Length: 231
Length: 309
Image (cartoon, rainbow over all chains, first blue to last red; front, top):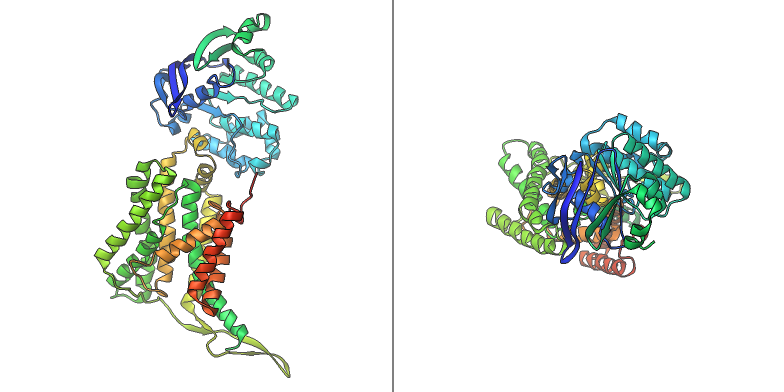
């Protein structure tokens, strides 16, 4: 289980996370919702060690991640697809995926699995990442993260700015991953897309975690969405 | 000598300094491109390479000059690479690779290396004997009443060693390109250059990458110095010119762009050499520095980089 207990973090003197606690079990899809600036992306960065904690702890099956150097987090099979994809723009798709494979020394079987999930990438393997369309870039970014063969996958706004067919593909991939035992922590703006694939929804407000509810309850009762997201 | 052969001679002489400049500048471009460190001490790695090459060949005078030079060509860059690696661990890493603080730190390194060299090897310029130095006459074509004819203008020649410097530099530059584009380590370096946070998130130990890149940058400068030291002499103050020219080349080429650095090295090296031969070396430096100022005003990202993506 990936578990955050009372984490706090700041960018310099600006505190962005005050007290965030949540957990993701293997095979579970947890979506983090909140208004802009609530601390969703900062929570993702904190898990990856890219934002140092000032309080609290982050564990994977009891092993603390927050005390490890950033480059050790991937060894614990926690993978990250950041907001805006952040592929290595001057590397080819193949090289971007190789970086993922190298993180844990995974072999070509993992690559085959990734290409099965995103067949389009096979046609784009030798193309520079910055020349891909937005949807292809997102496939490559998720594919790169999957190349570490993760147990927990962090997806920060994976459908941002994408056409409906690609959004549907990403939803399908997330569902497939959760069925195969991968825990997914998802930050997403498209509420309806979230509710169809998430098991739980965690609300964050001003750097504090608030309520965690089953996604199914939000389909009938939208009061929490109005309260924390304003929709 | 007529103008044609004179230009060819100037071009060949310039090509030698261009080759060495390209090696030195590529080292600086690697360090800036990957680490975002403006290494003001880069010229001192060049100087250390030259001085160590003199010291190594001086220890091996019992053997032929070729043996001494071959040992220096391998050992001097390795030693300078080790010194650069230690500098990274002891100094650059300790200031967290912060761009402003690393400038001050490398200025400090510049003076430390200069003074150590002065105290250890003294203030004299030291010659290194070239491993081979056959003078090769170069033919030229002239039009006669019978048509084109080959003749050998007096003074149109180059030494075999200078040709070897050009050839070895090209081989080394191809080697750098192969390492960067075809090896696993080159891939890691390019990924680190493009996004160090995401590289770390994928398990890349960027501090180790930085240490090795700084060592490689120093070793490349030293390699250039070992190649040039049989033509120029080794001296503790010789790092200034290669530093200035390398910065000019790296800024023109686009900070961090290796292909741009090579093209800029060719432009600056050849034009610098030609202007130095036909006018004066000082004028060559004035014009190169002026060009950099204009590039910084009109195209600050460099001549050979995409201005936007």
